[in-house]
Length: 138
Image (cartoon, rainbow, N blue to C red; front, side, top):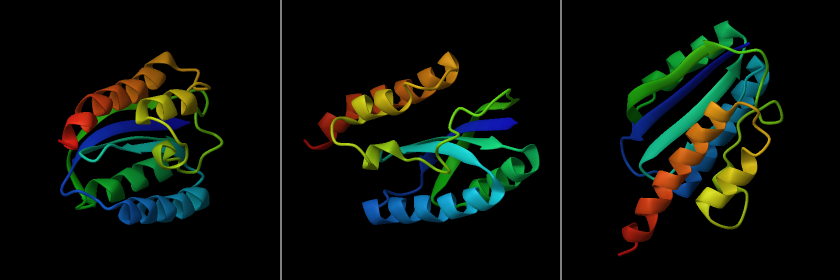
């Protein structure tokens, strides 16, 4: 089992419908390739973890890296892992699924993640997003 976690900056703001469509396409591809993962989008950045067999993960990451909707990809982790952390999700984007704050939603959805480093990555991303989101409305 292999996992990649990356963060990137969006090239332009994406409408909610665009993000939903992106996740729908990713979900279909990921099911076919045996990939599971989680994607966060805070309006400025993406954070994603994808996991599965190495070849499909590398191929998927090559495709993701060429996507013009984002740039400045920073690989947080590229490593072999003993087990999946997102086995229930072919591509989960929690923020669009549950009412409440972005941070609370992420905390809820990563509560079952066993790897504390991985859990901290997602909670930290959501916490930073919660700091700038209230000011965005001003």
